[in-house]
Every structure is written in structure tokens, then in C-alpha cells.
Image 1: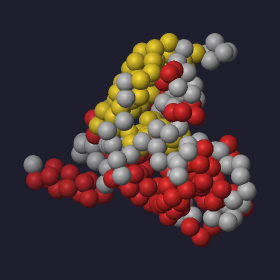
Image 2: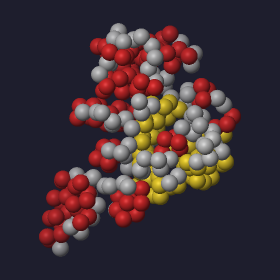
Image 3: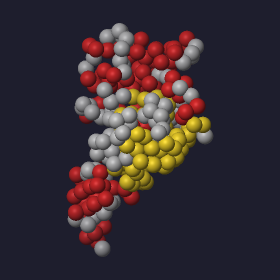
Image 4: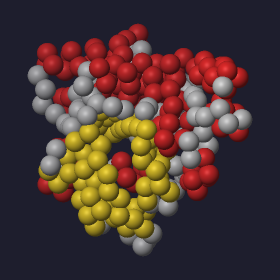
Length: 268
């Protein structure tokens, strides 16, 4: 999937301008993280990728086709969106039904639905609770139920809006495995997150938004090596990265890399 954002402007009915002429391209299967302070335009931007929101000016092209050419329901076959709050997405009376709803509406065969649901349930750790009512789930289980319901639709692109919120260590590890697995399956994952440790562990390309514009867009080493510029969007690199930068050891993301940087400096 190739997503082209061309001079994208979005103005809400209140008159507030959330996006101010954004242009970039996201394509392939390399996971992408979109970061920036609250109100910088992150969610507004990604909601244009499946037509939940429509451009005020400019365009978004999916494999060359304007987002305006189809409904959100039609684009959902290609781009799945996992909402930040699971309660905004869950509405049926069992996990099983939640997972079956999307692929059924998309017209997949019974065999395809069974295969997609089983795959999503297994990947998201839900196989033993398929009969449970979603509102009886823990907050972590609810989050993975919403993720699984989108994966079961078999889209080419999956957007995660703050998937790490409320997650424990096990949940974060599962999220990392899901992103890795989806990439191996040829899917493109686009994630909004404030958890910089999670971001640097799972994403190489970072897009930083600030006041509705792209502040930085590139490799994580390139982006996070500019802490002064990042402050404009209130983005702070992970603690270990800040320690290394303040001691002139460069931009590192792991303890191992920090140790190697120290050794290299001592040997210089």
C-alpha cells in the first residue's frame, strides 16, 4: 500500500485548522510511528487514511486513488483503524461476534471468516475468551479485542491510535509481537504513541507533528538526534537516549549500545 498525502489541510467546522498543508508518502511494510504533543494533529491526520475525515484542501491518495472516491466502509477493506478508546469500537455481546462482524460485512466467505477470526484471536491472545462479553473484559483485553477485530478484516494497513495506553509489560510485549507479525505478513502498521521507549523499540521511521505541520520525518536516529527541535512538539527521547546525548555519546536506544559508546569513547 502506498499512501500519498498531498498538501493536506483540515479545518474543523469550528474554524480551527488542525492540519496545515501536510505532504509526505508512507508505503511498503516498514512500520511508521507518528508522534507529537496533544493537539498536534496526529489523530486528525490518520483519520484521513480511511476516510473517517475528508480533506478541506489537498488530497490523500491510496495506491493512486483519491480518498474522496469511496466511502469509509469501502476503504475499511484496505485500511483498518483501531480507536484509542475500546469502548468507542466495541458494541456486540461476545468477543467472537466482535471479531466476526467486520469480515462478515466485507463479504468474506464462511471459510475465510473462520480463518481470519482464528488468526486474529490467536495473535491477540483471545482464544480462551471468545464467548465473553466485551464489557466483562479487562482494559487490556478490551484493547486487544479491538485490535483483533480489525486484524480479522485482513486490511493492508492497520492504524493504531495510542495502543500502549493502560498496557502492562506483557501487553506491550504482545503489541510488539503483533506489529512484527503483521509486517512479516506484508501489512503496513501506522501507530500514534506517546510511549517513546515503545516507539524506538518497534519503529525506524518517525513522523513528528507540531501545530498541524510535519516538524521532522525520518529515521529514528536522525529524528531523535535533534532534541532541541523536538522540544517544539514536547517530544522527549527515552531516558537512556537523553543520558547518552548529554554525555556526548551520541544517540543510542539500548543499554548495550550505551556501553559500546562508552567503550568507544574511552578508546578514542
